[in-house]
Length: 418
Image 1 (cartoon, rainbow, N blue to C red):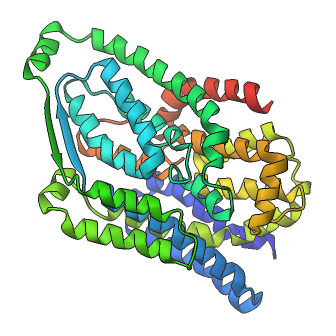
Image 2 (cartoon, helix red, strand yellow; image 1 turned 30 degrees about the horizontal axis):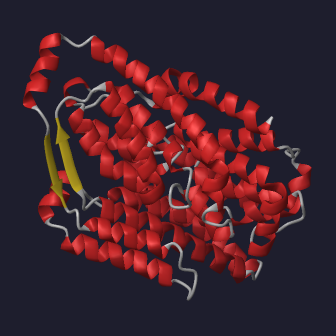
Image 3 (cartoon, one colour; image 1 turned 180 degrees about the horizontal axis):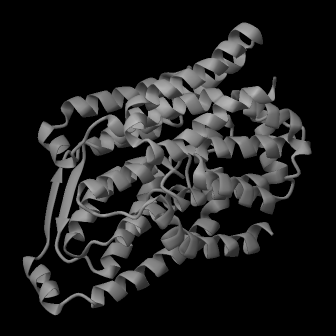
């Protein structure tokens, strides 16, 4: 019976990976109902059969914290508009990706991506190619947000479990710098190659237009920092989430409709994330419980194994539950419970290499496919709406993520986790 409880979790994740491509119209119409039904199966079993309401309530609390942060960042960043016209040189584009990667640690990968993708597309309009968007996904939507719990959902879940806020930047900054520098250098070389192939007259026309910078909704930066500050609040319960959602509500009401219109802002992306993740959080309750009690039997015991295993799952499933699953597994090997914050700190003191390997893989490998991380699909959707013909699911992998990212992952494994 225990393994039967895994079925809703497996069905949920496989549906997220496959259904948008297999039955896109049906999935877009019914994904919310589908997710809630799967979540209800597990919740009802835990409440009425196992009489274990504690696990359900604890998971619900974590979900509320998780979605409150994402919602706050998404709404507030959608109220900030800026546009830069002019020549997008390879150096300028590379600096933009670097700034976006740094910004992701303050506003989250979702917030940074939504804030920057439109002006990034506009500045490259005269020579935009799919690789511009894909490297944006690699860096801003994924790798960039590796240094703080705000940066990427897996790290925020780790923070909720007891990983200290500044521990992450202290332990991951070296790997982050190596990985990001590698990807940015490749992008710069590729962008330089295509830039030089442009006709001279096209370059001259763009240069003659000069730079024109437009801003709107800059007061929302205050609300962004309000949300960031709220992350540090731990007591009383739900005060942190109330502040985040209140900031988002006030921001939305105060933002001029013209700014939202220019950003083509709507709630559909965050609605999709909220409905899918309620299913993910609830259906993974029995999986986390099993991993915690049977970790020694799964044959994964070395940091390098955790790096590749969590990375591969992150590539095609969602990085947040992957992080939790493997962190639970690694702690279970030492008979420690992920739901005990004191035991999490004990694990960091004695076995930090496991947490580093899982953290890096859960964030970096999210760039391997469109479904590796939530912002990936949001950025792809915006780009296609702008008329860019993006590569399909498998073309993205074999043309870009495999040749660009796998060599970098191999080097990181050799240097840090072998």
